[in-house]
View 1: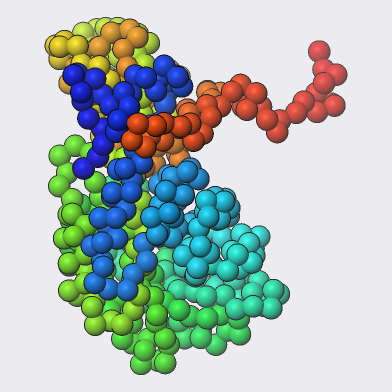
View 2: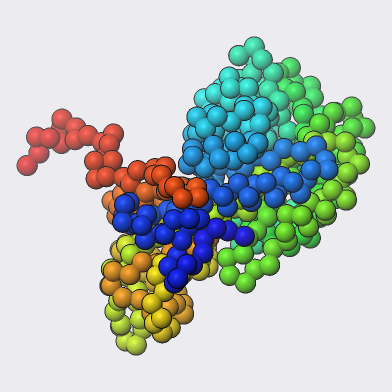
Length: 421
């Protein structure tokens, strides 16, 4: 459920007409519903009420500090994969003891910052990373709390680019070698083993892959305890999908029942890292139609949002529903909805049946709250879109639209270039 709805043929976000927000802020525009985010978080959290657990929102899905603050205020922690996300999480008021740090390429500087902050744990992705974290913790005179990210070789049945739990993926430590790696970690002077971690992919719409991974992790945990290694946390990652088009992913309650039934005897605190399922359908990208044209019997709707604003369709062939902000009772048009970027891959939809639109009309690209703005760029020297959060009858800009000056901030013309003619 989300709080985008039509009133008298006009799209509203909660209690505010979208058109009113556009009049104040312009387009392109990322628009988020506060009530949708909090409701989705509460539903996911409540699904695991029967077991000790911690919900760490995946910052990579949407790292705006107002969004992070919304989740933190609801009781959540944060799953991070970079020093920048750590900075954002702390700026949003996250409890460091509710921050988990994954990612295959942690630098020594990032590791130092996380140890200084006192995060809950690092999810270790390689043998060399484990050694580096031990070394950094030693220099700081502390101990680093860690889990190993286990690669269980489970097919998540999702797009190859967002699959992370197969042998050919770069993530994690092969489950067959993980017991030996834990034994080595136990011997390190500045490492505290606190858990086991696993994340098999994103936009997963079936329970089977989650259950397969959990079954393998249970066996590993039993063997680790035989080795005298305490496992207090089991981090099962994120990945639960949402409905973009015709998908029917499990409800969080169904997902929770399946997990709890199979893992209730593990005597662990469960950690989950949902991102898309919390914010995906809580946001839309609002764009204005610039032109409509026909080439060789093919229709194009050219809008002011491009692949730099929302790259998922170009990158993954992803589907995002497209609806008019104001329904005018027009017919149906089959068209490519494309942006202004000078790339043939710049599209939001291909051969899509949409409500007929004309120059100046507004459209809303649905399910854009996750991996929308966070993956946006300045390609073609385009300023990134504004972000707005709506709560009931109020809306506020939570990220100003970039200006041309923002595009060149930090750049300079060097002395040896200045004198050239």
